[in-house]
Amino acid sequence: MSNSAFKMDEDWLEFHPDPSVPEFKVPAGAVDAHCHVFGPGNVFPYAPERKYTPCDAPKDKLWELRDHLGFARNVIVQASCHGSDNRALVDALLHSGGRARGVASVERHISDQELDQLDAAGVRGVRFNFVKRLVDTLPHDTLLDVGERIQRLGWHLVIYVESPDLPELFEFFSSLPGMVVFDHMGRPDVSKDPNGEAFNLFIRLLRENENMWAKVSCPDRLSLAGPPDYLDVVPFARRVVDSFPDRVLWGTDWPHPNMKSHMADDGKLVDYIPKIAVTKELQQKLLVENPMHLYWPEEVA
Ligand code: 0GY
Image (cartoon, rainbow, N blue to C red; front, side, top):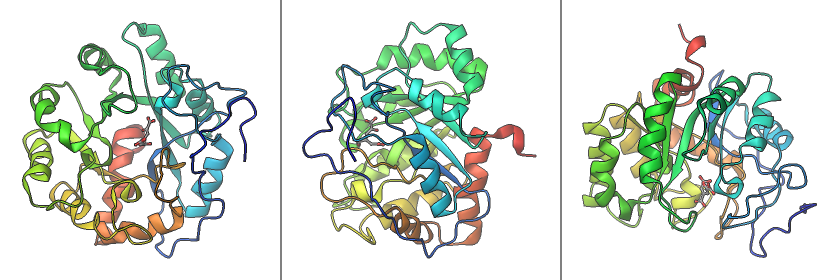
């Protein structure tokens, strides 16, 4: 596949062309709660300030994957290559037949009216990126300001941060208003002890702050052992699921931006789920109840 308006990075790994059919059957109504749409670049240009140029990963491909894996819904998360231009995200939400909700990126000067428009399209949260290779400036002030302003809409914050940066950000994150979701378990170093100091701090953050949730996603990104089982990530994700069964989400992370070691087979990623959520009850919470509570609360009794 090639971009019509943008040339993807030389070392870009494209999403898997033919993912396997998962052996694990996700429960009815399951939500893929972390995935992206990219472009197409000739319709929705990538942001000038982006740190990478991806391959196009348009909405129709995402719907195909959703159906192939057996999911019912998607939560589409704005990625840094689109900056704070949420048009590709909004377009996907408006063409999802109500089966996708979104997490946007916004600038501090966004108006209440613009926030209302995003809300009408299906946005339910705002993402702030503290991963230094992906952004030029860290968003402390904007986060506090926007974090307060989105409370009237019932939205939540999504934070992408890496484990080495958590100690200095711990107090700041603890002061944030409303619900806060951490991407990819705060990116632990899985060569370390899942019960050691670094991951204990992430667990403590969630234990001390009942407003905080975690995505137990991206074993492919975190693993040093590699595919297809990503066994070195399992103890970390299991610990989070077992400790906070009502505050965890799971997503494919399709189209897996910035993967360098390999490209995940999305079907195998689904087969990873029962290793980290080991009972039917935990699977139901992880894949259905929790994401429905956060993204489609009006449909939950
Ligand atoms: C992910 C992870 C990555 C990229 C982004 O916004 C982004 O560009 O989130 C990454 O490079 O680790 O969640 O997609």
